Amino acid sequence: MLKGVLAQIVPDRAAIVERDKGIAFLSATRSIYQLNELFYFCANIPRHSSRAFVHCAFSSDFAAQAITSHPISPEQLAGLEIIKLSQRWKECNSGDAAESAIALTARGREVAILGFSRSPTPASEADAEDPLSSAELKALGDYFHSHMLRRNGIDTSDALVISARELDCLRWVAAGKSAWEASVILGISERTVRFHLNSAREKLNCTTTTQAVAMVVAQQLIAI
Picture 1 (tube, rainbow, N blue to C red):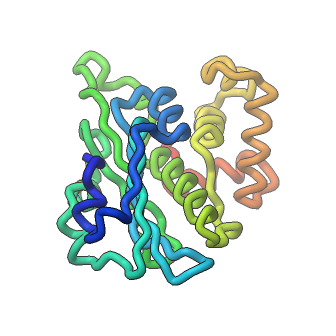
Picture 2: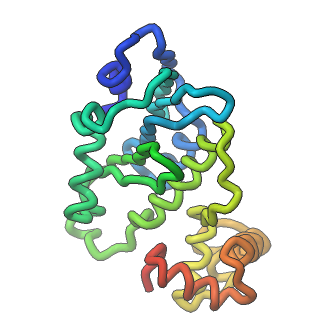
């Protein structure tokens, strides 16, 4: 879906730089959560040091970026399949679809999307716990998007971004598991679980894990 997407919106093909090597963060996330594909698209990131705009399309095995002197118009973006996919997800909340795209939290006028594809869930596993919920996927996407904004000189220090692993730990604590039980389930050490819980409390400005759980439940980042 991503290959060639920048060519559809950037008039000057010479401004597009492509490489057949993906982004490590997306590759690792795809592997951990057993996704067929994971991709990130963003248009109109303003460069802090100039009046230019950055546009990028990244996946686990592909990367493309372009810089233009003017932003891409909403009309141009509206014709992209990844934008249409995110609109369908928003309208239908089709988090269980084999292919979905989620609009990420914008800090300005940029448009950022995180998309994924996965194999359909067999009927025998329909009631099994989804290894990656749409809320967790959005949290991952917002984290990566903040990283991209910082790379272009935009301050995101006031953004409270909870990582997917922190959400994992909070979710199991919300389910009544101890830190040790959560560590066994997640395949990490108890010390690491406590580290993630402490990090989540600090990001959410909570004094207790119970308060942190209540806050992420209220924000619909996890379900109990």
